Length: 286
Image (cartoon, rainbow, N blue to C red; front, side, top):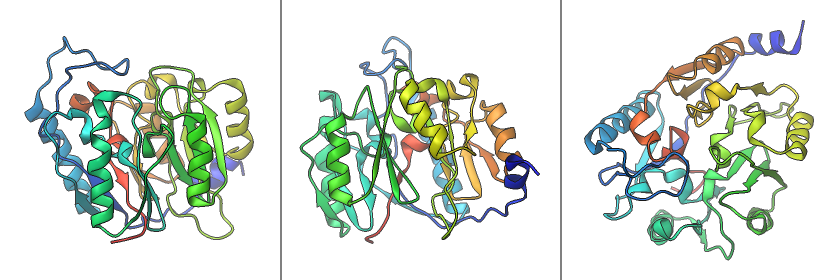
């Protein structure tokens, strides 16, 4: 039996998750800080809210807990809460955004974390939270190249006392790590390894070699699926919420025993964000 066939027979388990989201009441695209953002292209805030609501409702339907942070006028990207921090075991590492347009979001997230009992760490280094930091088992995968700096990789390792694996992003379309890697197993049983999916072409040669060595059974996603933010997905270990346009990825997930669920966030993609961007994992404090 091949590794892929063995993976397909694995029983996947859904784990209850706790997320932070922000209703896109002020969503628009009036500046450009990534290749997806075109201010001349019209956006529909009501449509963005309606699409976001379907994701929010689905999380509740699946049994997950969703907290909300109040959207701030003047910060249309605040809907992308994954950039609002990185949280493990009740400690929150706050972002320090690269672009001034988003800088005002950081204090709001820090205040929310403090109010909800997190040991809140204000960074010295430029980082964009779970956009560039992904927890895979006990290891932090950390992206750099466009937003978070390499120094933040050292800092996040010190904050959480975990091994950090640096990965260099080279394609500007995939400017955050969570656009190029999906963590499929947020909870890993003892003796097992976490599964990921990733887009090989988003990384330099050295990073690809690291991923191939550490995750030999990973799902390799096509550029076609990556370019519709197919990897910007959320998984509870069984249910994987993905873009309906990521057709190949949907098939790959089913082959591995996961249950892909399709949610269209096409309006929010105009701002360069998808399902994972709108979903910050809260680990620890209540």
